[in-house]
Length: 99
Image (cartoon, rainbow, N blue to C red; front, side):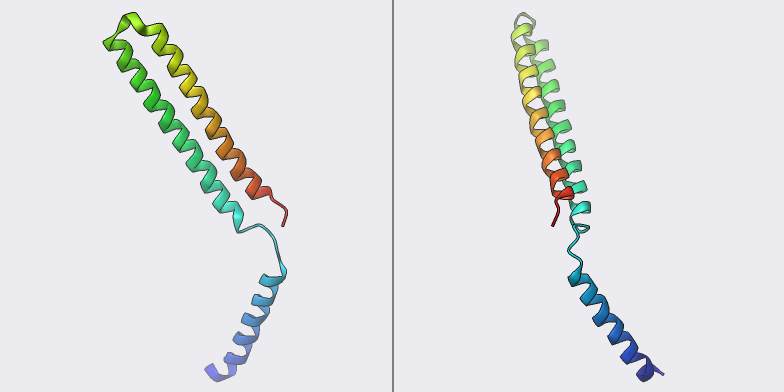
């Protein structure tokens, strides 16, 4: 019984391999791009939360320097957010890239 199925299975596997080589779609990049975009967002969220926590702690220790600390925290948060947007943009461009 198995000897009768072996030629059918091998022919199907060879045909599937040929079809896989012919299709040059970017379907393999889409899950990786989604993971990359997710990691960029997670990293940005972590960075902003650490900056906010450190800023609040510094303001609690030195209330007289609150305006300087707040300004530095806002600039740092904007830079982190820009890097996050850049990471998401790169991941989406990889996903939408035409091969």
